[in-house]
Length: 210
Image 1 (cartoon, rainbow, N blue to C red):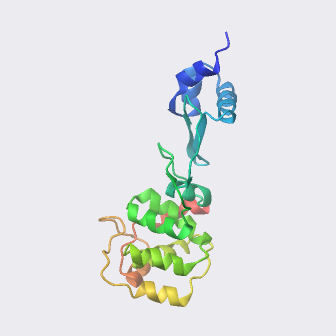
Image 2: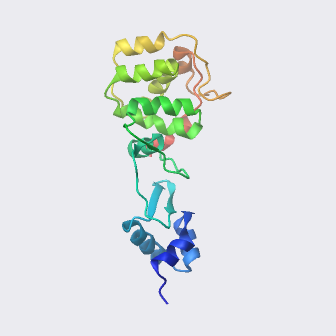
Image 3: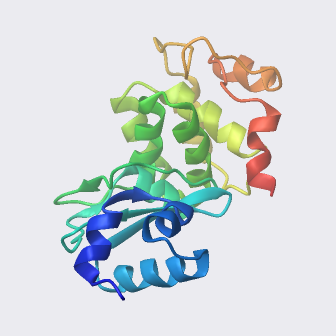
């Protein structure tokens, strides 16, 4: 007997993979995909991940209404090749998060994967002055400069204007670690230039070349 939408929602409520959905509904994978697509069209499902990352489906028994604008993870997942999977959908009310502010927020998170994924945002910057403004406000100017140079190792990035670069280079009184106790084995030249420690090695950047 075919189950109702309400019954399906009750069984699937929460965070799922497609394999878990198939198991919960006791159906084949193709049938599970069709069912979750049906529920998504009706407004009961949000998706995250994809590509090299597992796609996750958040199922709600009430229709999901997205209020506000994408937060940090949403911006990264929209523009970066490396995607982030989260257990919640962070939104910003009353304003939009710019690319420039998102980069600084990623650095302030001090989370390895968030900062790595945020490197993909550097090729979307249109206002270097705005980037400097947020970097100065959060006292992460040299970190921003170092990660910009790092992004150029693997991504086609617009050239930063010399005025902004010099302002970033001349920043003082910043902590040296982007992520505590993590140093690069491969980017010593960038570390020396910016006087901060890069937390990534060449192998970490391979995802951007795939």
